[in-house]
Image (tube, rainbow, N blue to C red; front, side):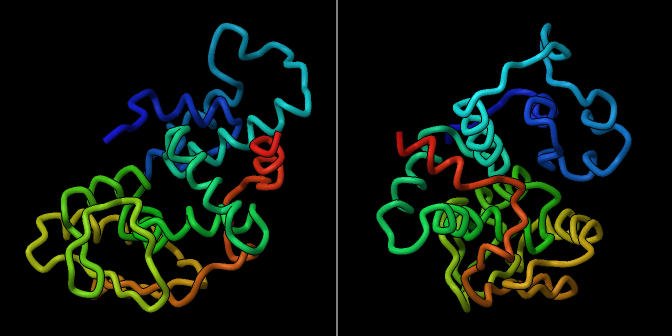
Amino acid sequence: MARDLGPKCRLCRREGMKLFLKGERCLTEKCAIERRSYPPGEHGRGRIKQSEYLLQLREKQKARRYYGLLEKQFRTYYEKAAKRTGITGDNLLRSLELRLDNVIYRLGFAASRAQARQLVRHGHFQINGRRVNIPSYQVKPDEIITVASNSSAQQTIRDATDLVSSVAPWLQADHDGLTGKVLKQPERAEIDTPVQEQLIVELYSK
């Protein structure tokens, strides 16, 4: 499985905001953004000439890193979103939100999307009673997500639920029973991803 193995905090500094890539660490003073809020590298504190292309690129990179995808994977999501009816940007974010690893993170069953991806790959979750180990699986409304009864990660998952104060309105979570459900497809107003998706559409439309 292809994935980005570089330093996670460096990505947050590059985008100038918390992307919550390291779970609980992002909520403490050890967070790189708290300590060094400028971009990484030799010229991180220098002036950067802004341009329309740069703004579009930064939004795309921010969204890609937020969901933990490589460039080819992200572009595939965009191409599928562009073929559907409706607003392309909304379709893109909706598809990304309904990825199994993201849903598990949103439910509070993992401290980060990277941890959620690992738990899924190791077969710790079931959908409607059937084990699914594909992080990109598109969860559908009314599908029920449960932790496998023989899972050795139950304590890890319970520890992650302690970091969650609330779940998205399009989801339903039972942290005691370790079960969750997708109530409906999320609307754009219900997705708190900190990106301007229209800039991503403009970038790929060139």
